[in-house]
Image (cartoon, rainbow, N blue to C red; front, side, top):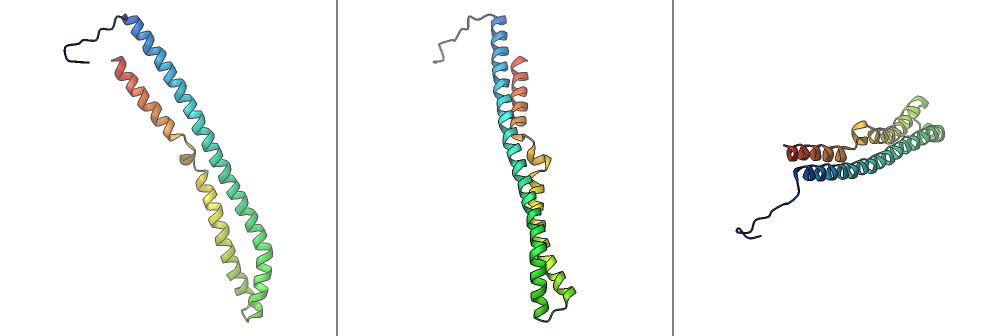
Length: 134
């Protein structure tokens, strides 16, 4: 549009307000869909975290039962006393299990599960809408 051309809008004020509300409703509908999508992703992340925790627990139980007996016996065979053999094996297996469970817990933190992108976008849209209404 050149500087000499002027754009005239023949819509009435009530028509403009109706358009604003219609577009705002459509925008918030799309934002709601975005929130649903992001929440679905976060639920998937939570389920994965829970799966990691369960996997870690299963590994801890199985590892403690099998490896402790086998490794303690092997360490005793090389001349290490039974209590020290048990302690060495328990620390190594316990560390591996702790790392798995800790990773699963971090996936389940509320800050990781909250739909932060969507809520930020909704806040920006609300602020923009307030500016348009003023």
